[in-house]
Image 1 (cartoon, rainbow, N blue to C red):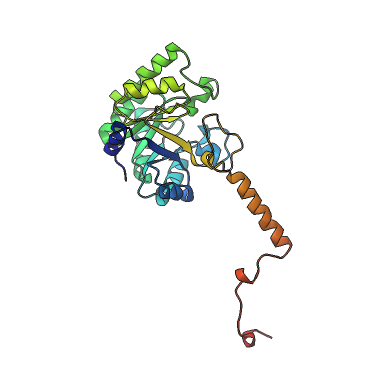
Image 2 (image 1 turned 90 degrees about the vertical axis):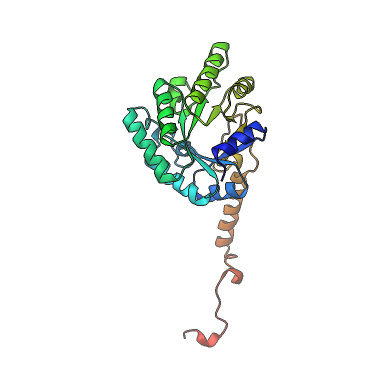
Length: 274
């Protein structure tokens, strides 16, 4: 399993870091077999596998349930778990308790926090001092999508870009071991990456980030109908899966399945009841 030091060595040697967002045992198992560097158990599971309209409905218990399944499927892969909506915004005491619960009960190697505020900076420092590594997340932060005004590219002007760079540097200063950059201009992704000593993981942030992350279901086009601009699908499980299911239904109705090859047979007819 990779460590924080391994990730920094990859960054320093310009070896790109690969991360896949996974939510269950089989997808995590495949990701590990494919030799991905990191797995993120994202709160996007709310939309992708639970059918919610946003990440806002996802709870700490949801994250624990799915992260445990992921860890069972990928025991030797660095796993990052999202702290979900409002689990780290009510009070510092409540935030620390939720972080402790997530970290202890999932076997995660790090927790991910979206956004930046004085409280998040303090929490990042407190968790780091307590032995819980933190991955930060700037740019488009889905938990605050209602404040941002929708799923839009962030940091498009000089003022916003300068703030994002300063925020990234603050998060590093307060102990973050990595930074996810979501939905920002490629040029800004490059600037932030060059400014930091910790790895950047991009999702719609350009090729110059130290690594990239995409969702398992998006990569395989599995159960999703619309893909963001920054997603490149590498297969089409929607098509393959529906075709396979239709073939199964057809064969059952035609009684061409199951054949003897898929049945258990008694070879001695004398053993059959009369």
